[in-house]
Amino acid sequence: MPAAREPFLADPRTSHAVNSPAFFTIQLAVLTLIGAWLRLSHLGSKSLWLDEGATVALARTSWQHFAWVWWHGEANLQTVYFLLMRGWIHFGDSEAWLRLPSALFGIASVPLLYAVARKFMGGTAAMAAAALLAFSPTHVYYSQEARSYTLAILVVLLSTYYFVRAVERNHRGNWLLWALFGVLAFYTHDFTALVLVAQAASLLFLPKPAPWRPMLLCGALIFLAAIPGLTYVFRASPENLHFIWMPRPSGKEFWHLAMFFGGGGAKAVIALALWIAGVVAIWRSRHSGIQAAFWRGMLIIAWAVLPPVILALLSLRQPMFLQRYVIFSLPALLLLAAMGEEILHKWKLGLLLVVALIAMSIPAIRKDYYKPREDWRGASNAVLAAAAPGDAVVFFPFYTRVMMDYYRDRHGAGAPPLHIFAPPYYATGEDARDLLRALGKNPRAYSRVWILVADHTAALQNFDQGASVAEKLRSIYGTPTLQKFAGVDVLEYGR
Figure 1 (cartoon, rainbow, N blue to C red):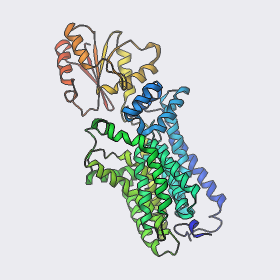
Figure 2: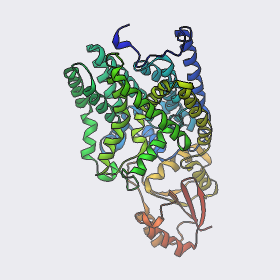
Figure 3: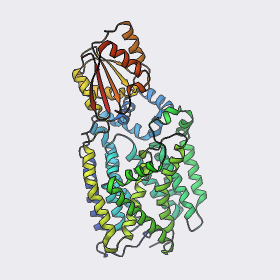
Figure 4: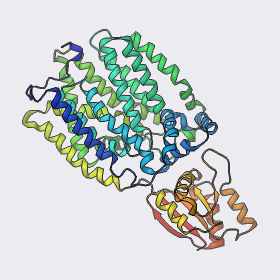
């Protein structure tokens, strides 16, 4: 077998029969089916949250408006995914249907991770990596969200697969495929560019003359193709690039990131033990006698570590150290854990840790099925069920109106006509100032006024015009009634 195709670490623990292609094919098929069941179960049980509502708004808007948002707003950050959803929404718009593409991308990533892992390690360890992805609470969670994260992970896996082939074979076709998937990854989510940087940085550890020339040429192609999207960083206003609630990097935030990748709680501790063992395995590979083994290991470490570190450095200026922005490092950490499983073969300790991690992940996955990030379904339906024609509704922040728009459409013809004081998604329209003017002219213009406020921790007074609206409504209608939903408060004035 050529050195470039040798496994990262030999696997002497299994017999030839166990290592047969048929055995691994059956195992992988079972894992993929389990991964599919986990990602498709309860797909529509939770309400959409605000980011998913933005996906719906971009999928429904006109092409002219979409082009405007692509240039002036954040639509170009997930271009490929939004274009896909613009076609997908013509066939249905339920929560489950909107999330189905993400689930399918997540399912496809399970066998693809195995294929990528075989570039780095033996079949048993590669199967462990696929199993960890199939049961990853983080990956299952984002496989049930109508956003681009699982599609981006899928494309990053393809990019990595062809990057390894290109480096070890130095074939033009593989370099071009790496460039193609690099561009697709960037336009699926712009932060995948951090993974491409990690791939390039790994060449510093190649024990033979690195193929810098084809890598730089294809890297230049990726950069040129990405320029239209990159210009958004320089054109956008600061509030469109980050929000005040986005965290700055700190030791605490890095620990939260480890919990995010590891699954939280005791699972993160087990994952950390496997990651450390994986790093030890990579360090030992320097003397394995397998050509490029150390480079492959350092590619995984760079993939796991550099994106969070680079994002942390960028966040020193503009805080945006969000865990999901570096979710594309998750496959690398699973590969690292699988290497740890392989090296901890004494007393089958590695296998026991992997099984324990998987077993402990199942309750976490089931819990997430029923825990909405934001219950806009419940909040919107509460208003639509109790409101009367002519009632007014105002939103804080104003852009959360997209959630009411979605659930009002789902409500059907029975939805009461409401006067909404919030502009549509990236469009002009009435806002809270217009509500204050209307109440100033006629304090009883509306029988009731409903306020929907995102995030329980955000006081209404902290929003633009929030304090003025609350004071005006209280002077007219008195103390409001309050209903709390996950991540959303509903205030009713005038009952």
